[in-house]
Length: 470
Image (cartoon, rainbow, N blue to C red):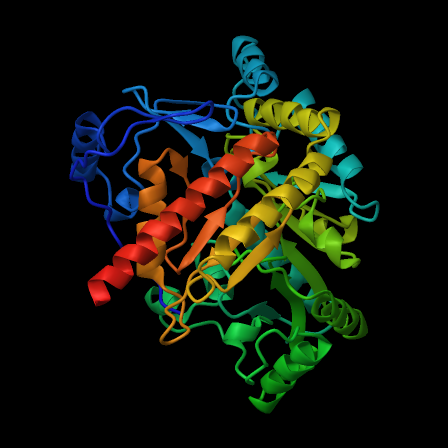
């Protein structure tokens, strides 16, 4: 699978047709010259990695819409990369932040504050009952690093060699050393040098990438898990040294959920071999998929859950949620800004909004409407858009080159650029998928309008591709 993450969008302003609807407004060239100047200036002082997104300079964001200083307004299908599940700038969240800052109470290190205590209690109340302990941290990568540590410490109680971590090819768990070692993209690990031999990957159970030639359209199942573990054993891995599994319910680039039978086989294997099952829910959690945590769709119990992004609706906060005996294994584990009182106050308000406004159920209901419209749109371009994956309010349209069947990152970049010019913000994956994740508060009509813009944008991109090939 190609990785086009290094594509740098053009800053040349292009005159585009004006747009004015209830949800979108485009009134200037794209990007506006003022935005292009700011981005060029930022590029002088920031690394290239910070200038690979669409050339939109956010000035304010409210609900499910984003505006720039020139009065352009975008319908946001990104949620700030799955952060603003309750919408941007929800009044309950902003008021909680303001009240805590005015108290004033900005930092407590490991000393307790009331917001931290209340947040931990709330998270336990919202998660499956066997998950009874919360470790608050700052970033998603911190949580996956912590989960790896807890798996290994648990394994060491059984035997000195029980350090193995199994994850999936193509997976992503963060950009720190341990998290990236657990990730499933070899090209992302070159900087690490000699890799820890206790990290292992088994194939992602996704038919188009199946190493065993799984027939397209046929579901992956428990056999795929058994083959993967058998492959490790054939490569000389002592399976009794496996301490835990670290997996995403769906991988971020694809929105394709792991098959139920695959996950259940993993759970059964972990139980039999005294290994832990960790779900990386940094992106998928907090109501996004129509369940509070996405792994609840599988009907299995997690030992540890990693949560971040939407947990606070915009401030740096994350959490590992798990069984007490697993997290208490290291009583020195805390983080300088973990459980920051301002972030905790925001997160508590955020979770109350999700409960009181029924956003988990709303994600499921709106998701069904959006799914139908996205599948209709993709069906118009079946040779270029053969797959639509997702659940709740996370979706991805998979774009491919009809001649090769490979994911088409270049076509995906054109589609999201065209959508931007029409007043719709999409998530750029750099892989050839159009990733969709609006705030859970989005009205059905706004979701449908966004889907129509995607259809128009694919039509334009495919037409340009065909014209260039003629």
